[in-house]
Amino acid sequence: MWYTERMSDRAGMPAREPSPIDAIAVYFLVLAYIIYGGLLFEYIGDRYANLLFPLGIAAVPLAYARVGRVSFAKAFPRRRPVRRETCGALLLTFGILIVVISLSFLASSLFPGLSGADDYPITNDGFLYGVLFVAVLPAVTEEILCRGLILGGIRRSSGRRTSIVLCAAMFA
Image (tube, rainbow, N blue to C red; front, side, top):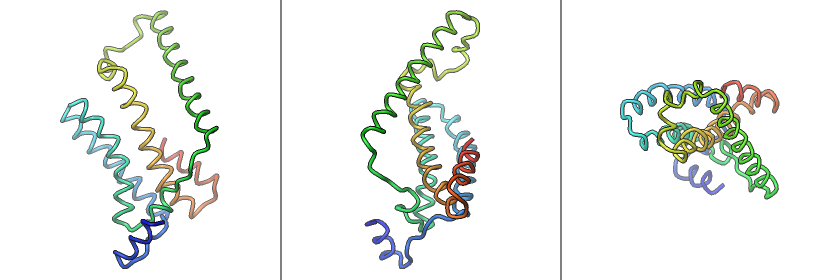
């Protein structure tokens, strides 16, 4: 609320709600960033610099909203999480992590030739780096991108279920 008011006072134009055009534009801007930014980060090759790549994915919709005078409050709605939902999500996350790690150990012990860990350098960089690069940062940036500007823009032109399905298809 405070950002919207300050933005309309400073820029002379009120901040607006995200539109379907905004959603499509952000989607293609992110695709371009993934292609060209991915090439740049691959060229750099530093494993810690690669952690910045997913953050750039989140920066695209945030910068678009800023430049396009899209209301942050409308594009990126926030609500205080319910304690029960938060605890359930954490338990589910750790439960899935334990199941995936257990299944990978079981599969590698039963089929030692199929592990393929040597083919993926991310596994050689340590567990914390792998969790950050593969699980945490992409999930956070996807939430900012898809749940924020894209879903908010699509929701203005279609129903709730249709917009969720379209947003999921775009992300997939």
